[in-house]
Image 1: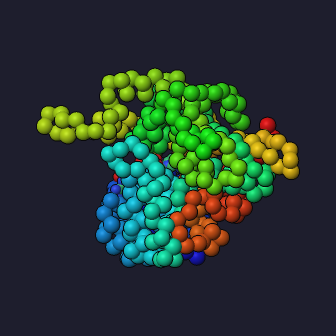
Image 2 (image 1 turned 180 degrees about the vertical axis):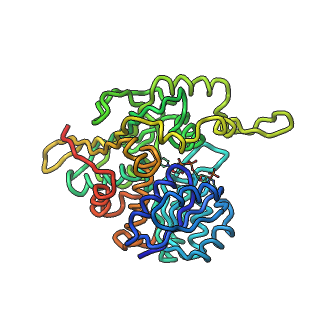
Length: 391
Ligand code: NDP
């Protein structure tokens, strides 16, 4: 029995709330708080059991600590935006609450995500006897746990990892992003980066691609990108020689993105317009479909996994560990499409490992540093079944 405070009532927040509400024996009391309270109330109205809702500005530590002191949660799940990671970690430290998130901190004025800001909290969380679980979404999150599972059960040494993320769904819009457009476009327009032989190597944005046969979807073109789990996995996998991340994009998405970039609409520096300071990417976010509204329109499947190559008992082997998730099934269950679902379910499962004690330790942790077995079992139990294919 535990009390959970969920911050952020977007697409992912909706799924976390629905999934926590389905487990009253673990999450006995739920509070959903976000910038816009009406969004929390709308989600609360869809549930079979009552939950509390609140308005909070997660950029303001005193507002969050006041809410925590009032609701007294055991764990806080941060599914607002990565900009709020540090203020929410500060609030957790001040009030003695465990912390879980799905995306690593990035400052608003630089499109750069790195773990250094959150890893810097290690000593403070350890001394306070609290846990911060970083990146408990799908990627990062489940992909890290797949690697930990492979390291524990399938390989003596994992030499090569390719994380492959395919959204084979179609929402019928010429251009829309499946999660927060600002965060999504910042990520996709960044330079590619991968780790090989102990060094980081850079590529021009979306300049390297390969075609891959995704289970449940078929062959799709995947583009090399930088993604945050590479930063922790390259430290925590034994014998690793190379790790890369790939994501699929359709032609229409890429063409729109190219045009938007060329005309300056993806810029994140302020531009003066008729006496106002406007950040083009934030204005673009206002114009694009809200990812939360894609649920009813999106058909098809996501297929995300880790292709791992290495050695077991002197033999070389190559396996793909993956999940296939259906957009319409996710919508039926939670009112959200599969990108939100595949992020929200692991956030609930991560919080469950913390509050039940299965993972609870003092300090700041990335997912692959913990025992993968209870998390992998829960993926099968709570809606994200996985398979291992020899390739
Ligand atoms: P949305 O934009 O749909 O939702 C974000 C929510 O946070 C909104 O309800 C927003 O409020 C709220 N919010 C934003 N700023 C504040 C603030 N200062 N105080 C309180 N609430 C705030 O995003 P998603 O649900 O798509 O994504 C949520 C998180 O999940 C993001 O961090 C994203 O990067 C991460 N993610 C992780 C993935 C993974 O696999 N690891 C994959 C996909 C997403 P309002 O409604 O008022 O704007």
